[in-house]
Image (cartoon, rainbow, N blue to C red):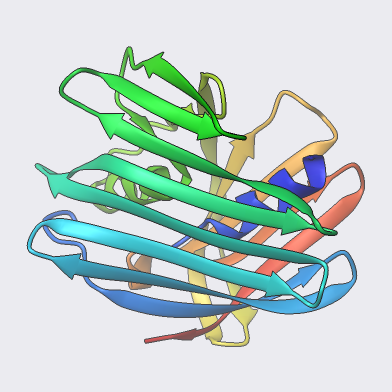
Length: 223
């Protein structure tokens, strides 16, 4: 299961959001996982003020991910409505679905055909809507670094920190980037994202290590 989490966390980092309006986009990444190469594509589509965000990734017979989320943008804040994630690593995996009721401050998490209703003490997110919320904050210069993330049977406090600026080169080109690190309780895990302010904090590179195994992702094309 740790391998599944490692792969899905890596592939669910997406493109940035404008403060007043999220532009549609498509971006492609080169992925290296468990010694295999693969690709990942992220697409954000818009209808009015409603959005659908999809992620599809594979790593040469080792891992696959199909993920989608629906949310809206109101006053610079992301409001999730639903999400679905199906992931497999070495042939093992499952599907996790989330339905949000923001008015009632609840989220229903369904995994292995078992549904759990969770109370949101603060706005909670799925992986994709959380990533969009973080980009909104970075663009507006109001990065909080602490968020509520819906897991399979509970809501977890997830923390990130800024770790400096640099310039890096990936297949898509050379970019000035800001590094964001996720804070893990497990010292054997590390997760870092290099985001380009010039591209609305689009992730240019991602690296995650768990139990000595590293997965990396680099931008190859943005439409």
